[in-house]
Image 1 (cartoon, rainbow, N blue to C red):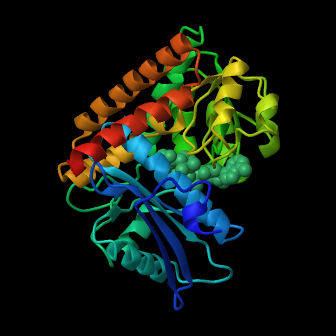
Image 2: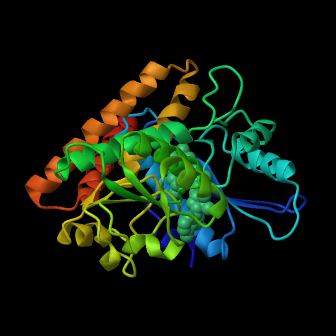
Length: 353
Ligand code: NAD
């Protein structure tokens, strides 16, 4: 199947396939839209089953970045990249430098940052080949690891949903966190525990879960059991497509709100959640904290109070979407997508005029 006929292709402006024999690099960069500015989005380093899976991921993720960036009202477009983790041994620094050369070939139409499997140290390697990189640990206006800010935005989103769901606050609210050993999941657990929530956690990396049990009294469950928990909130903070025909009917929660990108395997899962009376916080609306943090770096004058103001705005936008979902009786994800597409189209038309 060609890229142009791919079901996840959404008139992406550019899709770049980059390979480098010497380092084993096999990467795809998706530039979904530059209508509002250069496309910005993280780089995912993952063991994909095949290149078709990597392509599907980058097409969906880069579209999601356009939606995320416009809903956070940032003057940037949406892009994303994936690197297929090589089999066997490889030189990580050389691989990320080769990826940096691919980013550089797009002359600033795409600016990269961290995503799953990528650290600020990897971004340092990328920065040896291109200046179109953010999320660096040091330097002028460096914003560092975006995960704590993403976690704060997700926490705010969960807290807002919980209040709508009839709880006065998070005290005693049971939250099932998937991917709790990960960067965002771990910080999120810290916020939730501090607010008095009861944590139920899972991850494929068990080592990261033990400290959560020790420090916060979290209950550890098997990765496949997370969907069946008697919890109030499900917070997906691992990978996408976890709300799918196999899992949706197992959920006993009242709220789904988490950090993972593309939580719904297909758009109609949003309607199914709504039918089941489950409140859904559109992923790209509440997980924009990281890109807001990165934007602080792109602006060149990293200002924590600007970041905090933007996080507050996320809550306002979420409230608007959930109000409309309730009043119009339509799924929150559909309303969020419509709002995002309209804003991108407005910018595209203004640019073309
Ligand atoms: P991460 O790689 O640090 O964490 C992901 C965690 O999920 C890992 O601990 C991994 O072991 C776990 N995991 C993977 N498969 C699992 C499974 N089947 N069951 C349970 N756990 C599983 O990544 P991260 O940076 O914390 O990002 C988490 C999610 O949030 C991703 O979907 C990412 O795209 C999204 N996100 C991250 C940021 C950010 O700032 N890091 C921003 C926006 C969105």
